[in-house]
Amino acid sequence: MLKHIVDVLIAVGPVGIFLIGFLDSLGIPLPAALDFLLIGFAANSPSMAYIAATAATVGSLCGNVALFRAARYGGKRFARQEAPEGRAKKFKAWFHRYGLLTVFIPAVTPIVPLPLKVFVISAGAMHTPFKRFLPVILLARVIRYFGEAYLGMSLGLDAKGFLTHNAWSIAGLFLALALVLIGLIKWTDRRRVEA
Image 1 (spheres, rainbow, N blue to C red):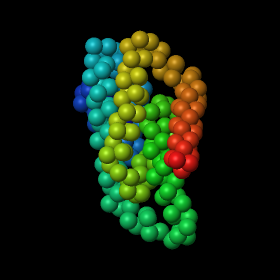
Image 2 (tube, rainbow, N blue to C red):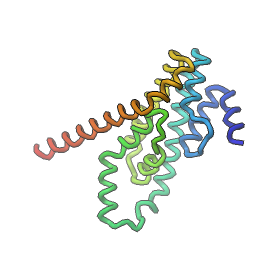
Image 3 (tube, one colour):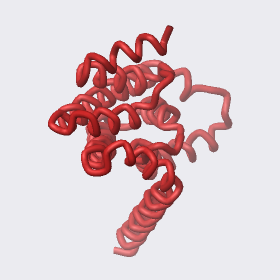
Image 4 (cartoon, rainbow, N blue to C red):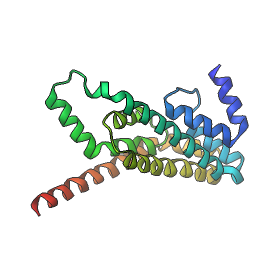
C-alpha cells in the first residue's frame, strides 16, 4: 500500500516530492529513498529540477521541525529518565556543544543510512534552541537536495550510480569536516579559557 502511495506522489511531481520529504523526515518509513527519486526527477525533467529540490528541502524541513517539536514537548520524560544525574548532565553538556554537528552530518550526507531522526529527537528532547536547530537542518538539506538535483541534471540517471559508488567517500568527507569543526570548537574553547 505504501508503495502505491509513493508512486502516486511521484506522479504528482514537486508537490509529491514535498510530501515524501515531509513524511520521510517525520519518521514514517517509505519504500523509496527521496534521494534517488529527486535524482530521477531531475534527470527526466531538468527544467523542474531546482523546483523539485526546493520542494524536497521544504518538505524535509517541515518534517524535521515537526519531529523536533514533538520531541521537545515529549522530551521532559526523556530528560527525567532514571539515568544517573552525572551522566545525564554530561550528555546534555556534550549535546549542547557538539549535538548540532551530529544533526548536520546525517542531514547532508546522501545515501549512507545515518540515523538523523535519533539526533533530531535528541535535539528536541535536550531543548536545543530552535533558532540554532533550524539553520543547521536548512543548510544541510539545501546542500544535499540541490546537489542531487545538479547531479541528476548533469549526469542523468548515472548520478544514482555515482552516489552509490561514492557513498562511503562522501560520508568520509563529511565526517572529516565534522572532525575539523569539532577541533575548531575545542580550539576556540581553549583560547577563551586562556583569555
